[in-house]
Image (cartoon, helix red, strand yellow):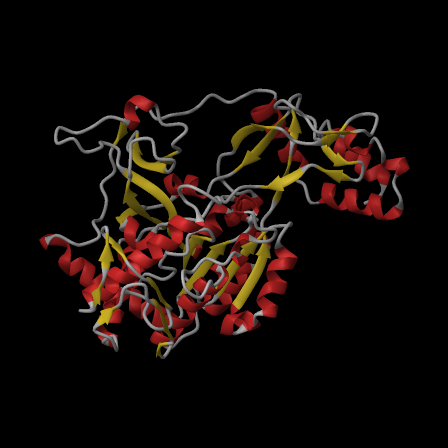
Length: 475
């Protein structure tokens, strides 16, 4: 795209200031900036500047907010037959190659004090395996158990795509067949000044940031990942995020329940630990299943309790979903992902009209993101299934305190100890906690039930032990 074309295109969107330093740029800088502009949908940019930046949209909370009916982790009498069929259906789909794994891994490890992709962060309690390896071993184990490789779709970001690919190559893809891994990048969105104009991070570069985890559904389409799924016969995706090593990447019961109920998008929930826990809230809003962010749910509703003292709105969202491929295709019909945008005011460094770099002390910009859970109200027959926090949710988000490496490793050890106890192994406890470091590779067992079937080769875990179960047993 030449400068005259760029000027026309940007002027039509009211953004011609983007080229204010064009004549000062060398050919490489001009090419870089032109490429960033070409990647934008300038018609959409103009709509967003007017609808979300210059005019702040009001919070659109439902008028009637009710608790959601969830499928329990363990079925009651009426549901036992459904769950039995769901497990069989999930296992059948895995044997037939109809399930793909979808990992959202665009984040950096900055808040963990790690300079690199978050997925590289070492997190297991004994072997210190990186997050990527934890997921790879799970998927390898399920591929082995069901006799069919599980295609793995990994969404990176502009910042970490190259390092992520290099990390996988360096570690020989953790034993995964490279042909069954599909890397693709998340989309980027420009930051807006408060007057709706696009900010420049440098004279030759827009101020860009990822378009939110909801943008993953757009990236699946634009990258060709959806086309790859069609070629492979993949009908459903198991969606999970890189910061939660305890997630069951593949859950045959959950996936089978999702399919048997004809759901286009299904989600896992856990009971909230406290009224104001920083997780989204599954609710029925004006009769429609949806998620309300913790920051948007009025405190009065968040703290409301039932007659027995339990929280009235108790279904926390933990970013674990199942999606029909046909649903993701439908969301992208016409080239626009049909999800709302969320506005956030931020401090964004930029260059001013004189070309000087400014690091603002106050909020100066608007960033727009899309959230994957906003697809739920657009889905047919969406369902919510309950899992347990201790089984499947201990994210690693920051270096200290809650949701840190220390709490995550602690929870991994507790889960491993519980699995062993259920398998008949005595685990020494101290102050109610396992008095040992225990790690169970998914290649040894992916669930407590599978561990019971393996018949662990020990009767007790000794105080202070450091115990690792590898693919072939204790190492």
